[in-house]
Image 1 (cartoon, rainbow, N blue to C red):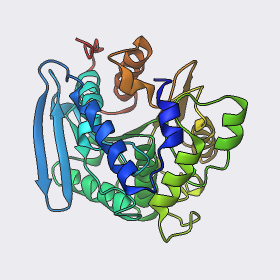
Image 2 (image 1 turned 135 degrees about the horizontal axis):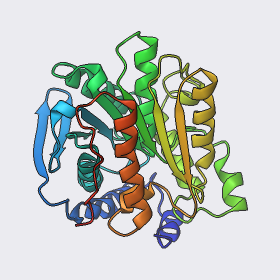
Image 3 (image 1 turned 120 degrees about the horizontal axis):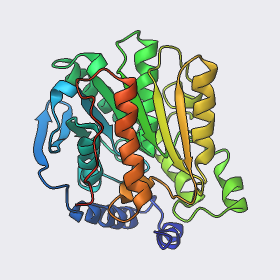
Image 4 (image 1 turned 180 degrees about the vertical axis):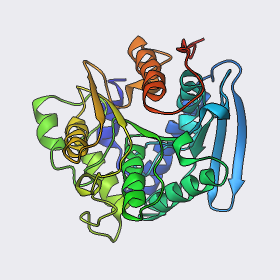
Length: 303
């Protein structure tokens, strides 16, 4: 994993040939085997596109998960994240809708944020809000926070809970360069994070209320779990989000995992910490949401 940093240092997203190459490389993650017994169903309904991933013993009666993938708003797809979404279905005993939202720079803000809201509204046609959990990693964490902020501003029904893995929240990257100078991030180059934030924002100022998720009001937000590695230059984003939620009277559990890299739960086939983190997500939902399942699941994601 540490070998990815030199590649990221050299590859700029502003170049179409390099951007296409990185997207293709990311897509090879889709070759990761899914947990045994996973059912996969394609979704194409109006503005909503993605995959339903249903693990063994997953039952919509327990609730559903809306998953927004990472990739700096520029990379990532349902191919790169289907193994993680499938593992989450196993540990939560819930079907997971992995949304294939529009990516920057071809489709800058508010495209991805609007697609996230459309997917949530689509789920509300058939599921009560208290049965929905929203999750996302990296840029997907920003989309999760943006979705919650949009719902709060519009006085819309909130989901039961939210989970963010290594969220990329401050698109201006105020702290990442300084943090990286003190402790080099083995995964995320600060310059690429800055490029991704600007690429997604497009013509809009980073202070726009739907982009400045750290500054958004947090009243009415559901319980939030954040998992992040302590090697990350983006760690400050998670710390500031947790403080913001708590200051608003909300519940936020921030877990900083020693020695772990950006979105380390996605590496669950390789590292025990990834599997432990996913197990905890299941425990968190069973504690903080309404569901019929009470027996603790044993994750078999690596089998």
